[in-house]
Length: 148
Length: 342
Image (tube, rainbow over all chains, first blue to last red):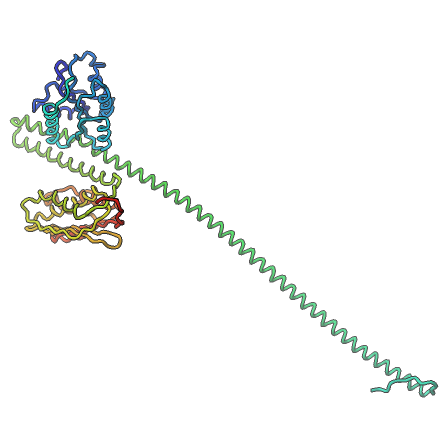
């Protein structure tokens, strides 16, 4: 998890334990290479657009996929999604919302903003690990995306 | 008849005396007559005066009566005004009462919304730490299995069992809150088809068991389909659960149209219940059996009641310990609109 290599998954998650569990699940399946974890919406955007603390980030391709939680401090998930999907530099990056919200409204809004996939975080630990692993497998290995 | 006095030429002194006497008698007669007339006149006068007096009395009486009538009219007038005033007051009171009712209803509705929002967020926010407890205790078990003895492992499993239970409770609270929150999307429902679908979903849970299932007539009904489906699943899965101790479970579902309602029932030959606790059946988290007899949190029937109440219907049940139970729900029988597809 460092910013010198190609970024695989960009994990945008404010909850420490959820992040730890997710990373553990991905590691188990060897999907955590190049994983980068940011803790709020502002940090996510700074990272993607090489601003602020990430101004020095070495130029390398965009993340393969962004796992985005919706409940985030500073800049909230839907706003992050909106910015990503509007900006020419980032709009082609697949974004998967992974959220504990069960509000239909959030799902509708996300799709309207162009999200690629919307997943509810399973409450049960085992199901959670399985879901994250499956997401990693699908988006990193099965899904194809254009080169940038 | 007295001889009429006549005056004749030359008359003797005797003639004159007779004449004078006759004259005087005549005069006395005239005076007498005159007296009589005078008395008569007096009498007449007095009679007239009496008549006038009576007339006066009558006039006075008439005036008194008039005054009485005017008083009555004035009283009636006053009463009418009084009545009008009271009516006005009643109308105003009604208006202010209605305004207060509207206010109170709005306040109550807002309070209920707040409560529902609250229980929704609380349940929702409780899930994340719960996942952490569950997850990390499992990781502990996995990664440190060698360092834990049997007792250590048992303790961890107690932690995990309880987190699982808590997760179920939270899910139930969320389900219950959701059952009351959303707006009803009323459509016409082919009840028979819906019941068939629900039963198919529950079949796997009955694997290997002997279950006799009967579906009677099921009149179509206008309701929110997802909510109605939830009701059927809850009632049918209860029937499936509580007939587990039976060699052959018997589950029957049917309905009829009656007096503006469609009354449906789910009948089973399962564990039944004591009628004296019937009023607790549909309450939240109330159970009539222990966890070791039958699993469950006691939310299924509360959700059924909430949904049916929302549709303007009613729920009730009959049962006997060890002799099974019948659960009824009635839904208003609105006429089917044209143009709506079941």
